[in-house]
Image (cartoon, rainbow, N blue to C red; front, side, top):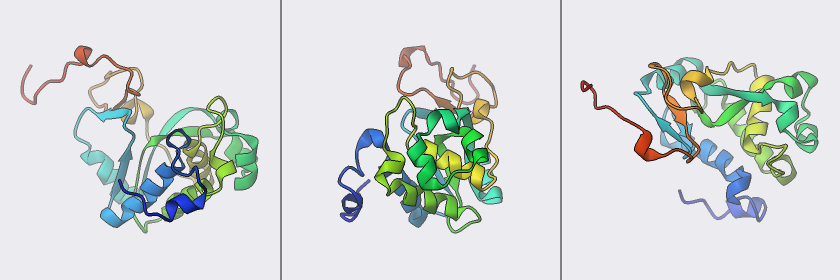
Length: 189
């Protein structure tokens, strides 16, 4: 991905890899490349066909996956203040922001646009990994704010391995031994 020069003008550290502001630009900018956008972090892999994900994006205009923990545990107070987060939003659960999709110009375009706009405020997105999940914190508050219903993380973002026949995504976070994964070709036992 090549970022336009103006992105670095937002603030000098906007493209800092481990602070994830850049990700909100990537997700927003993807709208110019398709009708249904699906974003998957590099620490995850598909384990089956994902036609159902694109069908959900087409039907619901959004696709987000539930996560673990509450926003109040994983979002710093300054981010809440900047976003004007309600108690309901603070107590809502996090999503897994590395797995999401949307229909450009659809019902939830504001989720995408506001995610980017809040990430343009350095003090909203930057923070210590121990109590703030950067873009995930911002997107999680917005999911609560806009009444977006997250999908089942066991199917669309399992962290423990490839565990179920209906599982679509395994979030390995680059911490799995490739030699122990047994992939099967379709029609072979």
